[in-house]
Image 1 (cartoon, rainbow, N blue to C red):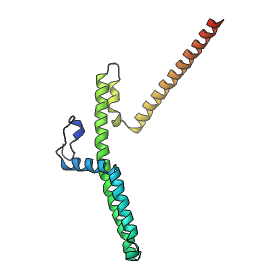
Image 2 (image 1 turned 30 degrees about the vertical axis):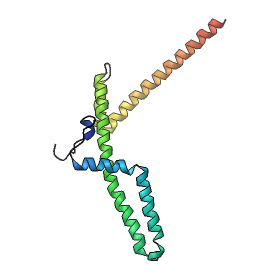
Image 3 (image 1 turned 90 degrees about the vertical axis):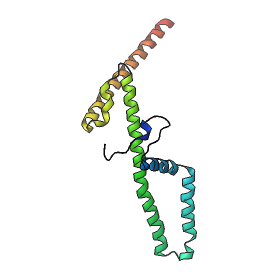
Length: 154
């Protein structure tokens, strides 16, 4: 399919995507979540702050940190979103496989992400009704158990 990136997590354990952007975005997103990334960012800010007197706290000095953080933030949004999209697709496929493999499970649950908001809300309401019915049954069962225990004590 033209325009779509291969999903490395779907090809099996130990295999890696051959597409450079998938590897790059995955590595950067992983590194960005490490303590090393925080230390590097903190060092950059400290160096910038210490260099303030050197540049007489000029507009250019302030512009450097503003521009740098804006560019990094802008690029990271796309890299992290790419990684999140791949992870979400992989999780959906894994859940679809589990749904398909378990007997008695509704197979129509496999493509929920393709439903409209209205259809999802309707399904949510169905599950809320099922949950309330289950809660009512649990309460009735608990009451019956208490009554039985009271009778046994007499």
